[in-house]
Image (cartoon, rainbow over all chains, first blue to last red; front, side):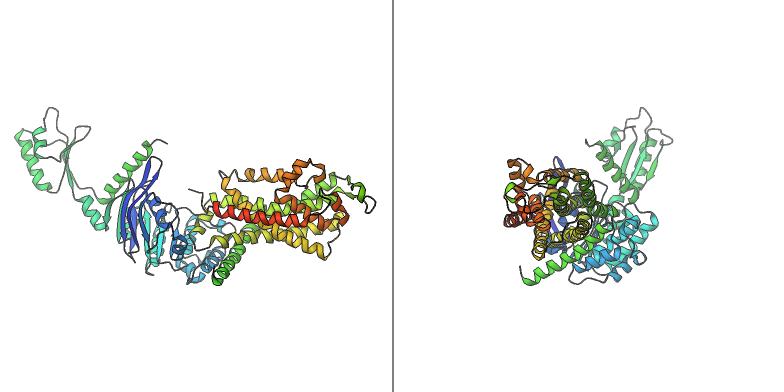
Length: 309
Length: 275
């Protein structure tokens, strides 16, 4: 196991940012911590990296405790931070030459520049690099020491579509070297393209753990049948039969179901039995993973806005 | 620490110094500030303050009275040494702590000791350049005589003790800075006060005794006094409060500050205050 943690908790005053997380990540895997902003991804990752102290729980990263053995751990771990500030006035070549000296068996500066596609900007000062080029430099700095484990904290946030595709290619190049990669992202497609396993994190807890296909099965399992009952109709006998039936604020009824055909037939019988010709606003829909995920994000963003400052 | 670890620590410190010097030297504002500031001070004050410094009665007659400007060369040189180490380092370090530059460095296996060595090395290199410029100016414009062999030796050990003392205090003081924007103010306040009470702008003898005592607790006064022993005729030691250059005291005070400051720096240093 590259990473094994149990019951990890971090509180900031009354807010519990990470809430008793258990996680096992196998060596050589690309693992995505997926979740909306403010879900606790960065806090969790910074605990694993050694930047933050946990309030409770056990952490083992490459067999070490990042809180106590950080300097040892730093020799084998590469970190791309969510935000980075390059040293002013220093070129990528100079920065990489220096960084390479810190490790026992680094790759060459040339190789690192090639890997991230920064060869042409090797001699430009850090302040003259574009946002994307700075991000590439971050990647090069984090991998030049040939780390066994790489943390990428939101590596493509703020990128346009083309830059993201390019960044994905670079990350794939890194993972081809056999390192374990922990990626945090709030883009579902990024997790899908890059990782073998994901942990979906929300409100400081991991609410799903497994592969994307499993998440798809879990989140998409239910088809939704919904309609607007005309005024005066009492749906209580239906409620008795279908415990999962939900009534919206506007009175609209919806039923999540795994047997949509059978339930639809029952609904039609029920409506006929009441002399309803057409069931008003009848809909049968199956939200896809992307929609479910966006709903989840919206939900937490609304929560965050509601939270007192 | 084994020899191999020590060698690695120093080697990486040297590497960081070279990198850090690029950062500093490629910022025109920083270069101008540090190199030009003491020189401007020297020129302006020397033009304004043209009175002479008298010697106490027992030494009078042995050497001619000197102009304050000559006295001031030593003081402003001391101020430059302390300013480069304490002031410039403390401010730039605070900026790097708050903007996350050092957060990236904290993720690498760069030892903290190497990082500190690199910072001190940068300040030393800077100081040596300042010294060359200021001594050249002092000789050319203010008739300062170049020191003899003993004087050069004193100058060297004063720099070698004064710069690290200023550096570790500069590192330590970043801990009390609430933000990067506050850094220059936080660092200027003690620096300005020390300049006024340490014999930089005024002769020590013109200060009340208790203030002389207070200044004696801090490094700047001893830097200035030591440099006066380098740049002024020996008879002017009678103008010092103790009627002597007190170089041994200077060495002890600076060494104690290095030890105390290093302890504080190691205990309080934070790579990252951006979060």
